Length: 244
Length: 311
Picture 1 (cartoon, chains in turn yellow, red):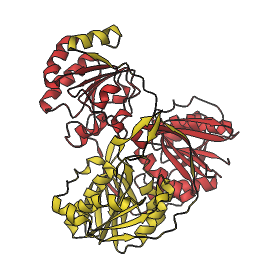
Picture 2 (cartoon, one colour; picture 1 turned 45 degrees about the vertical axis):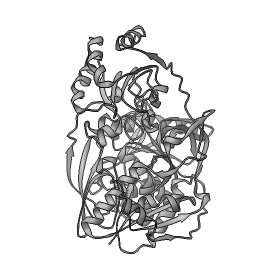
Picture 3 (cartoon, chains in turn brown, purple; picture 1 turned 30 degrees about the horizontal axis):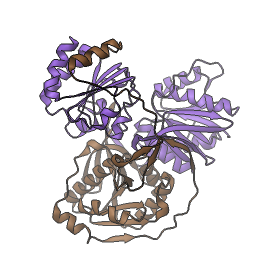
Picture 4 (cartoon, helix red, strand yellow; picture 1 turned 120 degrees about the horizontal axis):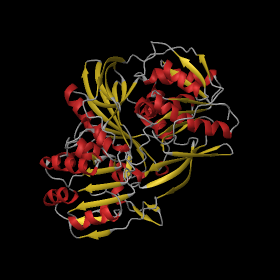
């Protein structure tokens, strides 16, 4: 069986600087979102438990060929990539179409894992769109997965309750951050990552735009930034402001 | 625009997005339509607020089966000639949004925190780049799915002219079986409603410090919240206390931030606080730059002092 994890290359959010309220993305390193790393770890654990093959699928600009080593080092066996510099900032609908296309080239897919939202846009659409495109059942916001042959038992975490669910494979799942703690790859794993197979897919990336961004600015945050020296001084000033 | 429909699994959220739906419907000279699924009470509430309400009552349709739910909503949009669907951006709503958008070939925006409607356009405001920026976006495809954050709108007012109609759809189950629904073991704290928040970050080194932090929050009349790693990695608190992009977006009068470095996904959850205090042993912590009052100090030493001072 093949287990698929879809991951999104994003700018390292800690490195984004703001100038004149505009985000500066030049020279910002690329990485994967944190919840995507949870999805990958979930895939690694399922692969180990079921002796399966783990394939990471990703769509992004040319730098992805390098970024993907992170995922290969952390336990993916191979990668299916769609690379094009025009794939920066693509919309969820386009991303889903390409990921679904890539997955359809893989045989014997048992489970397709996503993070519940990407680190940058956090729109949470792509997993659901891919499930619809592939005509597969889906379960989102999952914090527990157990595979037993062709059957999966999962727990979906909603705001006010948990659902214990059973499904037959294949299935699309999105995971929450608290499902696991992603392992840190060892030096040998990092060294081996470069040699793992990468399938570069040539897909037609053209598609209709469905969204328009009118503006994208950092919110104005004017804070006093007053340094106080002691706890007493702190309590005095917040009392004086009527805050407590 | 041909027609606009709202749906949420939660009664409260359905009434909130009804308010947004009415704004859009009025702007387009349309009447707002609503659908309720296996929820008589919700259908009555929506009708009382003026919505032309369609109720689907069919025990075969399970809310847990997102594929079946999306298929049911697809059929409703076709029957009612609807091209714009508003959903709630809670977990069920977000999961449904992407699937429904794909089925009806719609552009989709989720986690919309406010929207403005003018001359047929719907300008949506949402966080992007992990919350580093706030974008105004609109769906330009003919079909539109928009998922609106909880509390973004007030509950709709009572209005005459609503109705309740039966609606039947073919149920296409995807084989997902609900074995059991369990209550969450976590507490029922509502950090979004708190006027004062004391927020625990990774700079709080020991779990032994939590009782005194809880006590401080109690004395201030507030609640304790935390940054994401404190809940998901350290597991000191449940997820209901997480502040940030994938947790709660809070707007307290006062936020006392203890040992949070200030990653962008955290900041987005607290930047609308009226006043922010940051206590951190790292002078250079980014959190300090967006605080009103900054105390650079070792947290362990400061906590008993703080408790005494607010006495």
